[in-house]
Length: 265
Image 1 (cartoon, rainbow, N blue to C red):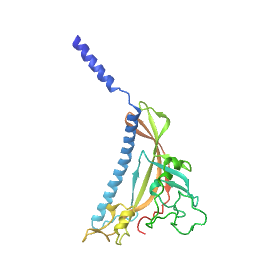
Image 2: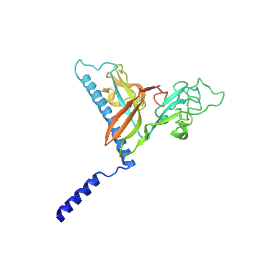
Image 3: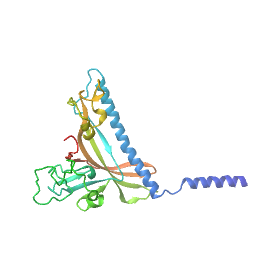
Image 4: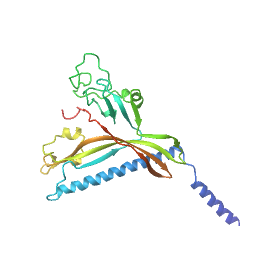
């Protein structure tokens, strides 16, 4: 009888241990993990598509059509995007995906984060205020591009934002997730020599740059993928019992190309 009671007690303890409450921190980490897995799966599908298109180049008579596209996805729960940021020079409203890497306004060609004094040369881009001693655009002042600083002038929106009233880790957790989608297009006209400087600065996927068979250098063979467009998207996710579900998917917003003269000038 004692042995039977002991067995029942152990079983009850195991059952109670299996029903242990999940903390907010544990639930949040699990939520992050599932969202990353969601976007990793999309990137893996894009990699498969890219590999399949690459096979066509190796087959006699089969060439990947110009304009063939695939997309890559970026999500970082610690990052943020900025909507309707007004350039302090020309007042164009901008959508920023990474303020720290975006140096010059696509409309006026000047740094959008600083106020230029009266009388500066608008036609000179970048001007003496925006350019450094090395002849390249200055990196933005870190204090000007924090989420708190950007929120004073625009909507600084986190990439992961819990929806109010639904953050109970033992029930249903819900969050709005923002992401960046980059679209790449196959360009069959890539038949000229490409300098190492361009490779490093032009944001082209290096695995798509053609190689010169003789020297193993990037060169004249046709075609590579080039950045075609960038979008900011938004999805509302729910997370319950380790399962991630999409509740609402919003229309993606296109991002205007930025002037970044750090590269092959």
